[in-house]
Length: 165
Image 1 (cartoon, rainbow, N blue to C red):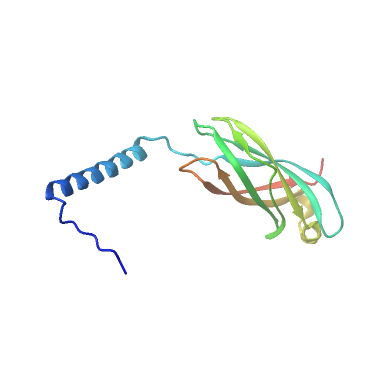
Image 2 (image 1 turned 45 degrees about the vertical axis):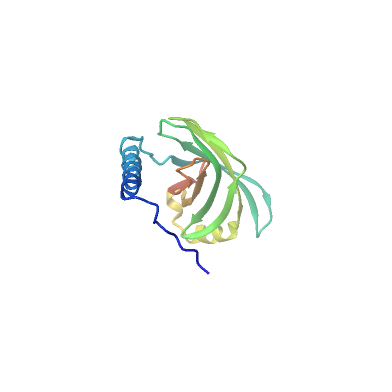
């Protein structure tokens, strides 16, 4: 049984006031988005790679990411997940080790613990052009924020690791 709603006691004036209030809220929200600060996506780069251990089939790696925040507001990051691809194949996948804050117009580093299959990367290296002395990679994932209106954003970064020191 569905309850019936009656508007018998509602006057046209109170309906109009409700519509005016709804319209005012809509205009106010639209004005806030036009006047409010624009969000610029942070830049992520690989700052370091450290092999933590493993065996032939699985390796544990710590990726250190540098995150640059160009915004005038600090960004509280609750989690970061990432996939590392070499030659179009995902060779590593992992998540950040904890929550952190990227300061306004500043930088922060984040460690991402990944589980990798370097055997796939070695197969790619065997077929790659060794003259360049570098391995091209793609890093993609999602950063999750602890903010009410901005929950997450995807990222993608392309770069190369040097094979020579």
